[in-house]
Length: 441
Image 1 (cartoon, rainbow, N blue to C red):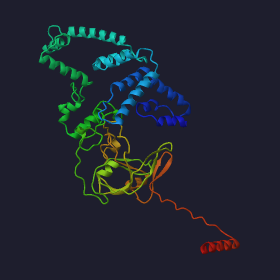
Image 2 (image 1 turned 180 degrees about the vertical axis):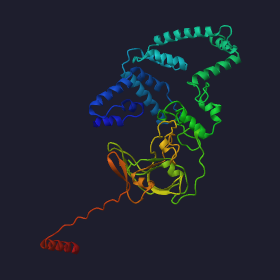
Image 3 (image 1 turned 90 degrees about the vertical axis):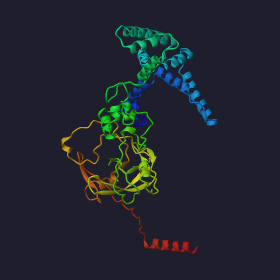
Image 4 (image 1 turned 60 degrees about the vertical axis):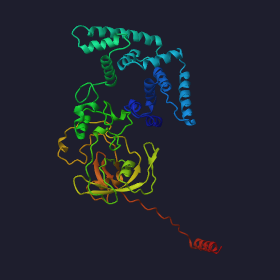
C-alpha cells in the first residue's frame, strides 16, 4: 500500500491520469506498473527521443566550461542510451529515417506514423523509402484529377509549381505555394470563432470583441486559457504569460482592473485577488506575487509545509497581515497569511460552460466568474475560515455533514502544564541544604 502511494506521488500529468482510476490497494501495485510498461516502454519512441536530443543540440555560444560540459553530457547520455537498447539494425539506418522524417509535411508525417502502428521496432530506411514513393504516386493522381478543365486558375498554378521541374517559377506561383505551405503546416483545425482556416488569435471577429467577451468564448469553446489551443490548461506547454500582468493567461483575455477602494490598514496598495477557501488546510497562505504587488511588510516566519504521506514539500517565506473587503458590503476580515512562492496550479483545471442552477441563481456570489481558470492568490485555511463566515469571529463554527457536526475555526493553544514534585520534610531539608551549598560555591 505504501509503495503504491509513493508511486502515485512520483508521477504527474498523463502518467498520473493513467492510474488515477485504480483503487489504492496494495495488490494493484503490479497492475499500475504494468500499465506504465505498456504505455511508455516503446523501443521505437525511446530511440526517437534520444535522436531528437542529438539533432536538437544547442550551440555552445559561450566560451566556458559549463557550455561544453552540458554539450558533452547530452551527447554522452543519448549515445549510451542508444547503445544500451541493443538495436539490431544499422545505426545509420536510424539516423537517415530520423533526419528525413523531420522534413515531411504535417499530413504526410501523420500518415507515416499511423502506418507504423504500435510497432516498437525502429523503422528501416527501406520502409520509409517505399512509403514516400507510394505517397508521392497517390498525390500525383489526386493533383491530376483536380487539374481537369473547370478548375480555378489558382489550382492549375499550384499544380504546375509542384509537378514542374522548372528552376525559376513565377513570383505569383511562388507566393501561392508559400501561403499554401504556411496554411497547411500551422493550421491543424479551423478557427473556433468563425470556422475559417486560421488560428483564433488572428481572427478579426475574435479580436473585435472586448476582453470579457473573449473570455466567454474561451469558456464556451473549452479552449486553453493560456494559449487558446484546444486542450486542457494542465497540458499546455507554453511558457508565456500575459504581457499586461504577467499572470498565466493569454494577453487577449486580460481584463483591466478597475480602481479599488482606498487602501486598507496594514496594506500599501489594493488588488482584486482570487481566493480559494480550503478549510482542509490548517493555515492560510498568500502567493509571493500578491505580496510583492501589495508591497506587504513581512514578519520573519519559516514553517515547513507537510503534504500527504507526511512528507515535507516546501517552506513558507514569512508572514503578512492583510485585510479582505467584501464586494457586496462593508464587511472586512483581517487575516494573517503565510507566504509561499506558488500556492496551486490554475483552478479550475479546465474552462467549464456556464450553467444555470435555480437554487443559487439570485444569490450575490463572492466570485461570479468561478468557472474561469485563474491563478490562486490566497488560500483561506481553517484558522481564518471562521473570520469570513457570518458568526462570532472569536469562536469556532459548526457545519452539518453526513458524519455529524464538524467544528472549524481558530482555537487557543493549551498552555503547557508545570510539573511539581512533592517531597517529604526530610528530603526537602536535604534539597534546601544542597541549594545553599551551590549558592556558596
